[in-house]
Length: 266
Image (cartoon, rainbow, N blue to C red; front, side):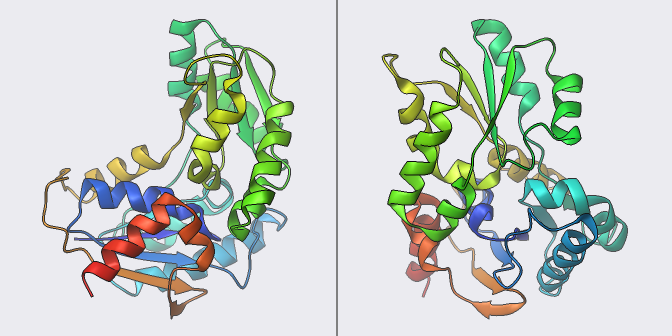
């Protein structure tokens, strides 16, 4: 089996690693767009055009499913991607995990924070998610200025500074955090530590990687087989060009996992 993932940059690594853990025998195609990133400041038509180019580049490798591992692309381009590629290629979008986070908060009684890009925080899209899935939970949007760019750069000082700045904007006592950008899942440990305070373990983080990986396998009719032989290959595309994982990917555990397994298979 073969699963493709697309994003403007390395935010797709979290979902790719989740697929790899679930199916070590799956071939992966990672299609990103360093020539056009970041997508966030672009308008809907531009985002859709860039996302469609990324998706078509990945589709040319014959995957069984495509994960749109990007919140921005899922918001703006998912209908076009599905209209263009389905039913031949199932397309799985990414939605911030507001629903499970609100359900978890209902049992703990604590407030919820949604860490997202400044463009997403307070947007009609995020408000709709809260209205539909928030179930009355105390939810605060936290704009994370520069965090996705810092993660993309691989500069650990920039990452730590951006995480700390967002932590300072997060209301005290938050027990649950939704990671509303796929990049943020790559630094979940840093986020939890920055928000931990005097509590043991810190808040519960809710990302989307595991859910979209599971959905891609379901759409392909495949089951989880974490003990399968680690035979899956890795193809990396940068704006359609065959490339290698960027150096910034190796700053993160997910990137190192993919790189190490690819090297081991020669």
